[in-house]
Amino acid sequence: MSKISAMNKRATQALAENISKQVEHFSKKEVECLIREFNVLMAEQNNSGRAVQGLDRGKFISTLHSIFGLTDDRMTGRVFRTFDKDNDSVVSMKEWIEGLSVFLRGTLDEKIKYCFSVYDLNGDNAISREEMLHMLKGRLIRQPNEEDPDEGIKDLVEIILKKMDYDHDGKLSFEDFEKAVKDEHLLLEAFGTCLPDFRVIFFHDSIHSTSARLETCSEY
Image 1: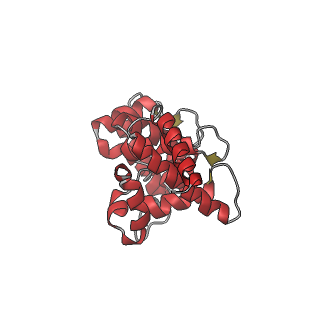
Image 2 (image 1 turned 90 degrees about the vertical axis):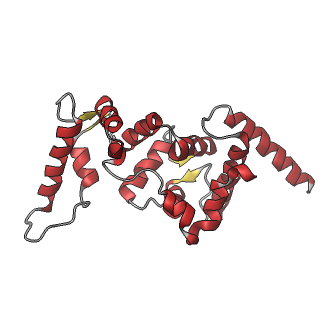
Image 3 (image 1 turned 180 degrees about the vertical axis):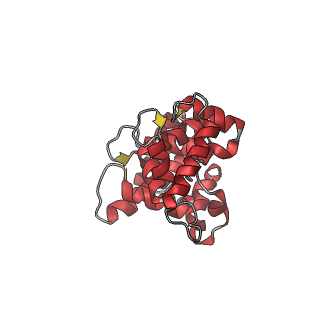
């Protein structure tokens, strides 16, 4: 191993030691792997001429597409904003690892908070009718002779509110969402897929080489 490689390895280990003390669900070895993977993604991004100090929106979203099977652009944009805690328009290394800790291994409580943040489009701590309509639009298959496809979405929103709006104020607070999901876990992604499709990670041959590096961190 060259002197530079040894220095880089020690620096990565020291950084992983620091981050692993602040992030749940990943061991130090796994954090080292995620740091290396982040650096690979950054090198790919910078080679394309986008020299910034973190993963930009385009690179982050393409990673969600290729590795984690998330393809709904309405959702992937919101996932980016949820990872980007300091709102500086890039996902830093620490934000990447913190985000993945919930994204990949979060508890139900952590995932409820994460999904609610994704769905709360304007950040006012509630999911309004308008936000539901925006997220659900285009998800229903149009029925024959249906004049206004949006009517089906409006009906679906009313059904969701009837089931999840416990305080009957016409919107979903965090408390409403949390109670509904804990009563019925399938409601966690009620407004769109924002968590990874593990079938894609484990079985899709076209992304095997990259996903294997992420999913076998403990082997490094």
